[in-house]
Length: 196
Image (cartoon, rainbow, N blue to C red; front, side):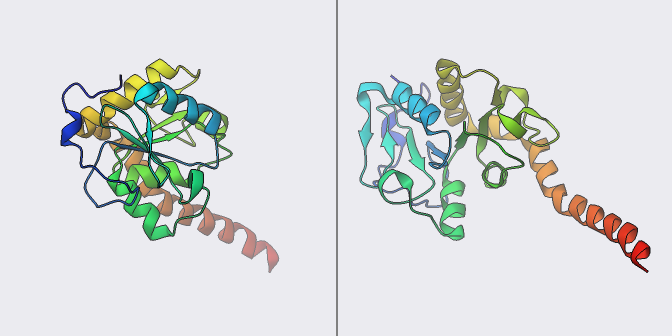
């Protein structure tokens, strides 16, 4: 069973919606458009026979943790508005992403800024700390569903402690705008004079 040892299931607000309410819940969110074979395995292992699929597509464990796609409709296949994504991320404690990472993905960064603990694989850009500078304990080189489920459980039960470990990642994300401006300014200063 995937029960939280320090938080009984009855303390989690019962809800039949993935719609966020602004306060952190034992909610794990994921992008249903990528890495679903891995995500499905995590949900199956975490939920086991206690799994209960809600009408909104979320899956609840017997231990008070819900898994919810970042999307609506069957399987979360319909897009959410930007505001709905932000609201959901602000409610979730954990964001998991075991799909391909073709570059600096937007969702892991948005999830971190919304206070989620971000857990990924090391596929593609996520393998490089220059692209996804998460602490190594949150990046899995090999898919080990038991270790991943254990980390999810820990991140839900000790969310503030684990979220604090992402402060450097959060600072890096916030510095991206300044870095982008400096890169563009440098390129303009290099290209424009050569055109004259």
